[in-house]
Amino acid sequence: MSPIVELKDVRKSFGALEILKGVTFGVNKGEVAAIIGQSGSGKSTALRCMDRLETIQGGSMVICGHRLQDSNIDLKALRRDVGIVFQSYNLFPHLTVAENVMLAPRLVKGIARAEARTIAEAVIAKVGLREKMDFYPEQLSGGQQQRVAIARSLAMEPKLMLFDEVTSALDPQLTGEVLRVMEQLAADGMTMILVTHEMGFARKVADKVIYMKDGKVHEMGSSDILRSPSTPELADFISEAAEH
Amino acid sequence: MTYEFDFAAVLEYWPLLVQGTWTTLRLTFFCTIFGILIGAFCAVVRTGGPGWARHLVGLYVEFIRNTPLLIQSYFLIFGIASMGVRLPILVGATIALTINIGAYTTEIVRAGIESIHRGQLEAAECLGLSRVQTYLHVVIRPALERVYPALASQYVLLMLASSILSSVGVEELFGMANRIQSDTFRNFEVFVVLGVLYLILAVIVRAGFALLGLALFPRRRKLGTPL
Ligand SMILES: Nc1ncnc2c1ncn2[C@@H]1O[C@H](COP(=O)(O)OP(=O)(O)OP(=O)(O)O)[C@@H](O)[C@H]1O
Ligand SMILES: [Mg+2]
Image 1 (tube, rainbow over the protein chains, first blue to last red):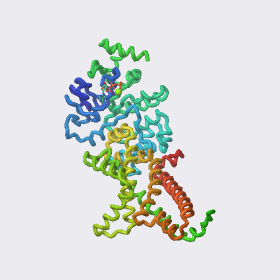
Image 2: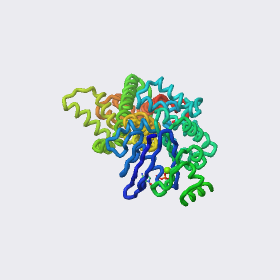
Image 3: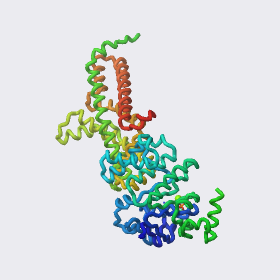
Image 4: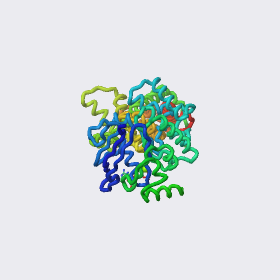
């Protein structure tokens, strides 16, 4: 199976500060990869580089066939293939749920309003918010807003979904509803990379766990490494996470 | 000696007052439409345009905000005339006022644009929207919504300040009042009537903005939250 995501010795600096110090890993089609690690280890940076929100300075990164180190990369094509959801939902406050979801299909793919509405209905139903189609973001709970953000990405039919700590801002009971949506997505065969602090969730859905430390992949393997880590650093990290 | 009020002498000139009020209202209306368009455009250029264009807009804003409206109008109206272009004075006045209010609008809308969270732009970028699409669909409307009260006040101010154009021969409300004054010498009565008329005009402008707000911001309409 060919990898849909391939990072080789990726380096990224902000000014003189090197944040990614040679990151290497791959994710195959249909796989779910969980990136874990201490705060500041470069997880978000790595994810942002994959959608070219940040440019890399060394190594190579191929995402859905797009070579991100190329300066003449077709960004529009990359962003059609990649969906990304952040911790802050970033819904457009002046648009309804349906309008939020329809915006990109209409503007980027040029899909007509009626057809875009059909697409929106399907993805909004998928995240369980059919009855909220015409609500505004401020009328929704955090968990519901985050599910809309996921639906908004799905409407573009991405080949890869990136999630950056999408439940960190949510109460425990709201966390559950978002995680269930992601679990369903994984079951449907979506290729996903998620940065998460939810160890239980990583253990349950991740095919691959990537533990980052100081801008490098420190340990990587199947979700079994969460039960029996081979490096003492990961063991410490897991027991620390369990305390919270 | 007691002063005898004679409002009748002033109100006799009601056709002039109506005409002046109408002129002021029209002037304000067109300046509002064009002013908001120019202001929104310049604010976008000022925040997202190429360097030279940002500077150009900055220059425009600073120049207008630091010179008197009367002098701007004078040079514009008579400047155009001296180039041999024959424009009705009201058109010249509209252009002058629009250029003036456009600068203030630019600054207000710019503040609105800068208050839009970076995450909004990033979300639009990740969805594949172009910069222009992002501005049109994600930035401008919420930005206008945030600064809308300030904008409304600025345009009431514009309406009041338009009285200054009587000095360059525009027969708006204040100009008409001057005529009545010199005919009747009833200065006090004229100013009382004038004050009331300007007050009514201000209420009309505010109501107009409230209606425009309902059209521009459907979310406010649906949720019933005030601006
Ligand atoms: N735009 C930026 N400019 C400068 N430094 C940055 C920038 N973005 C991130 N950094 C720095 O890069 C380092 C890694 O940040 P990153 O957000 O990738 O960490 P993280 O692993 O996602 O942490 P967390 O778990 O807290 O989200 C941090 O030290 C951060 O201060
Ligand atoms: Mg992070």
